[in-house]
Image 1 (tube, rainbow, N blue to C red):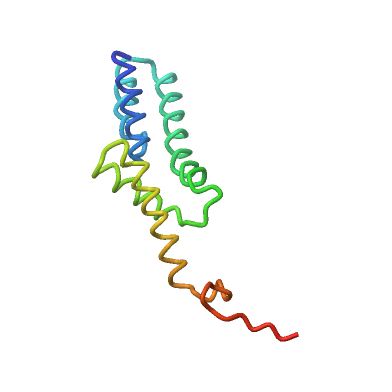
Image 2 (cartoon, helix red, strand yellow; image 1 turned 30 degrees about the vertical axis):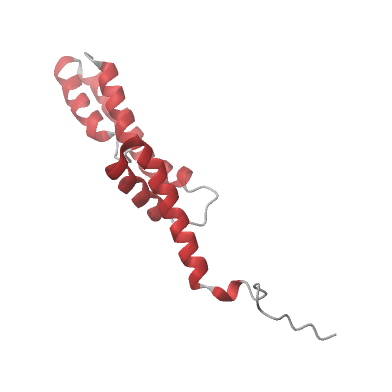
Length: 125
């Protein structure tokens, strides 16, 4: 494959921006069918398909591990941050939107903390 490093870099950038790797792997598989035998090209195509499908369900599962924040909120924050601020915005956008979501849900459910500061506690014993 000529310029394999550039294609690997393109897959890395797509992964950072939360786009699927098949956007790069499909043209590479088509090119590989034109220059190689059918069996190796088919094996590469199946491998690329498995990688793309596993990326589709493993990324959300691993990114949202240990969080109560919905994965969609993190994904929208990452994409919006990447659009507005590039690579750094990818991380900042997800963190800011996740914090905003958590603050909003805490603000909307005041019954979760009944002994909040400023409220008199009634202790009848």
